[in-house]
Image 1 (cartoon, rainbow, N blue to C red):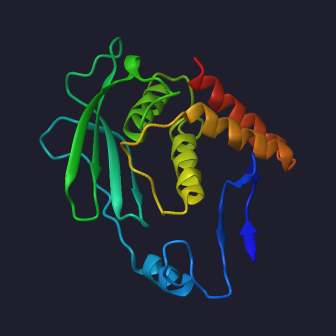
Image 2: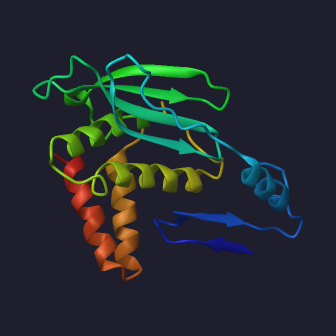
Length: 192
């Protein structure tokens, strides 16, 4: 039996499959994976004391145990916005990147770049947290669920406009006109 959420183009946006054997695509039982997810933890990190960095936003993915933060550095220039983005894996190993948002292409960028890009939209006053950063986090979460592998890499590049367009179309298809308009607004930010 298949249980799916909203979706378009022949694939579910969110979903899972229960089979008679009780196995999912990765080979474990659904009950075992649900119990493991309930025990999962992630540490939410902020700015290092004394660094002068200002945290724009932080989040954690409990399933993968990773967390991320986007910062303005002390030499931040609104005319040339470059953000520091840190990603921690479940073992606490950190990857740090500086992202020049003027070079981010929403049709071909990774999550690190998208989070910096949407942080800049929020910081520049072009949209609220809910209209920018939160929409990017939700889009990644939907893509994670769709992939059936739990999460995709923060460094894997995607066409975010396609992901958002699919979410927008799903909202319309299921009669959620308010959701449709919210995703359409976010798509407008990405199609500059």
